[in-house]
Each structure stands twice: as structure tokens, then as C-alpha cells.
Length: 69
Image (cartoon, rainbow, N blue to C red; front, side, top):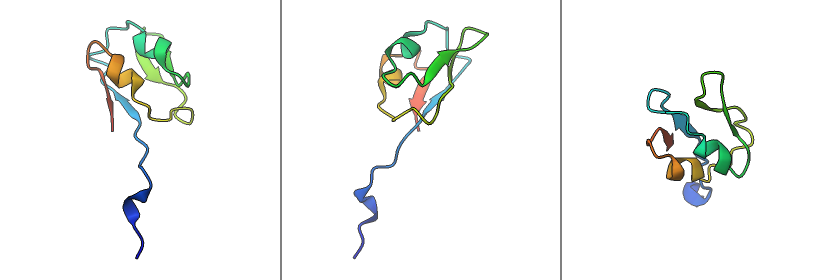
């Protein structure tokens, strides 16, 4: 019998740009440098392939603008 739940599914951050105030905390603390500030001074996931789904951005966002899904 194969256990399908043995591999943990990788989650990626989803940003709510309306809630983002552009503080940059998520960008500064991302251990993989997957996030950047865009031209509107809002966070964005620039390098999805670098993101390992650690959740630091979600944990540290003061505006709850990031959620791992």
C-alpha cells in the first residue's frame, strides 16, 4: 500500500497587495531572497523557484498581507 501523505506539499506565499503597506520586513527576512519590493514599493514574489515555503514572510508580516497556500 502506498502512503500518499508521506511527502509534504510545498506551500508558496500569496500576497494581498491591497493590505501590503510596503514595510519590507518580509523581503529583509526571507532566507532565500525570493521576495523583492516592486516599483510601487509593495512586496512581490520575484523568484518562486527559490522559495522553500518556510513561512517567515507570513509569520513576520504586520499587516497579514501574506498567506502560505
